[in-house]
Image 1 (spheres, rainbow, N blue to C red):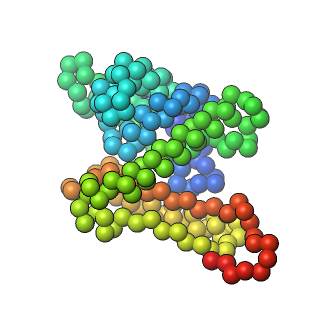
Image 2 (spheres, helix red, strand yellow):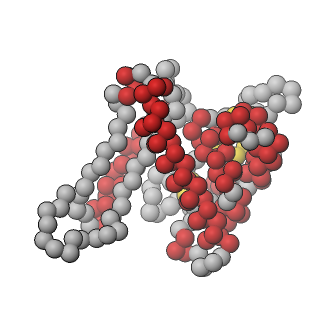
Length: 215
């Protein structure tokens, strides 16, 4: 039986107002496996699936996806969707609520938790990059103009203080929260899975070494 109390007991993230829970060490270690991150992402993006359905989508065996689903269930990251299925067929869904993994800076260097954070982050970044590249390379073969005309990838260069960047992200969270509340539980007819990727960060290479235009 799925125990979602573990997630519900976690504090909200102060750095990211849109996050409901910072997952526990046990949940983090449960998630820290490449296939489990992929399963979690698949359930997040597409909704409930069976172990067989996940196996087909991820090119894995149903025995493997079934095993990893049970491991994720033990720490409350996924749960059985009892409104679906017939007989022994089991459908799985991601436990509701947005999550964040712990800040690696708060964890001892070389610790199991810090290594788990690194693995999960690497898999999330890999998945996001793959999803975007698939759209760029195959989107015009899959989608009609109604989707291609509204999909976008923008690069915006600003000069901001840390406080201004925090304000920008907070404002974005408010807008996203409105759409999550309106459409997450009751999708509009004709809708399909959409992924929003927002990257906002200071450039590592810093300022130019000589006077030059910026922008």
